[in-house]
Length: 210
Image 1: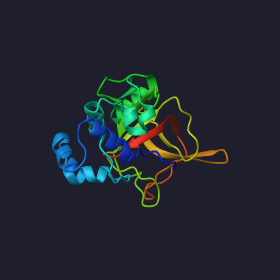
Image 2 (image 1 turned 135 degrees about the vertical axis):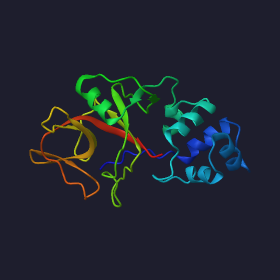
Image 3 (image 1 turned 90 degrees about the vertical axis):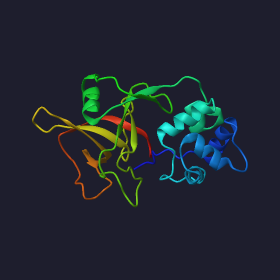
């Protein structure tokens, strides 16, 4: 699967921290108290891996305190803008309703990276997309989807599964195509591939690990 998890460059965080008035010796302890995390957590943010990224609520808090856009914080100094596109954070049944008929009960909205004009966010609900040797999407990570983007093989997708009982379900999987046959593939091999009765409704834009 193509990498879609956002890793925040340390220099972007350091620039934000400096704008907040924190730099030099004692930065980690001061910032930890301000942001409600431990100094060790600040240290992990500044030595990033896919498993040590700030949660989305912390990114928003940092951007607000530093008077930066979320784009600038994540993508760099020249990417900043003051207006945001945003998406609603939905549960799976709400996401199914949204991609099926455009309707859902309005819930929490979050700003997103880039120009996602029609999209939504969900939490990963199981371990089907975790993997040791591939890009891993652990349970509870935040998945941001773009309904206007056409998927390519290896992209993450949100699909509707037709169960034949008028109660379709939503699922996050990797899109695969062999010849004319399309598949939905889990990173966790204990989950079998799906080869029928599904419709792809949105493509993964990126994911945020809490």
